[in-house]
Image (cartoon, rainbow, N blue to C red; front, side, top):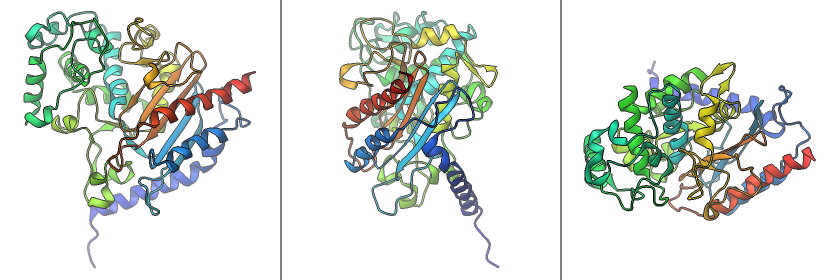
Length: 399
């Protein structure tokens, strides 16, 4: 009798259970979960919201998407749209689909870790970076504070193509720490991956753990987030939405990899990109944040820490510490109906999370817009329309 390859057997088993989960969740996709009295009621009509997401698929802005809407009580609406790619026989998106989050890593890994270390009194975000990494002080960076990295006003340029001239993680950080500043620290806002590459290293220095290990121990494992991780195992790749044609598992016959090339060079773990997760898992993190740091009776973060990191720091930009705020920049509008207390982040691959504690709502919208090689900027139009449609439905009911 021929022997069954254990890797393929594992993949078939996982696919079976994901299909079973999808079937069981079908009623939730259209109605929401009304078991919790704080959940939004069945009467909410998100037809307009669905039509906006489908419009993005018809216009080839992204091949597929997953949307979750919730509040302090839990998930109240989840829906999946389209497929992994644009073909007729594409694998369909489903609530358990895992996405390469790109820069959402900055808040759901690096910033969460910084918040936890701040809670523990192990890090002072108002101290110089060089206090923790002495070699960072090279070339006039001795006055850069950790808060400047979080606020993206450190003086760093937007990025550097380390993958083009470095061969090892050591060479990447050696080059990073030797990098000169582009402008005087604190004088203006320039969004930069270099800030969060540095923060990832600070987490490692302070905690003695890599950022992925620290977040797994302090958040993901304790909260039961089984689809949130760096470096997904080979067995999970059939359930991950492809971000590039070349790395689509079913086309190449091999496991994929994180899209960001610098993260690849850093063995899949970096402060600026590399985290993978599903909409449901991200929702649990949002529920924790909107409940002032509590999740299922366990305290993960102090309320004061959440407020400190998520509020707009100054009029110079829309940024808080790590997080962006509801006072979104005009060129990347998040919508017109969020309160000033809203906070969130977006990712290059077409992912986003926004939380509005004042209006008791969060919105997770995940797409794989980079699939096919074209980067369609129309997602910056679709996303605020989607957010306003969601908030409009909620406000109409409240009135």
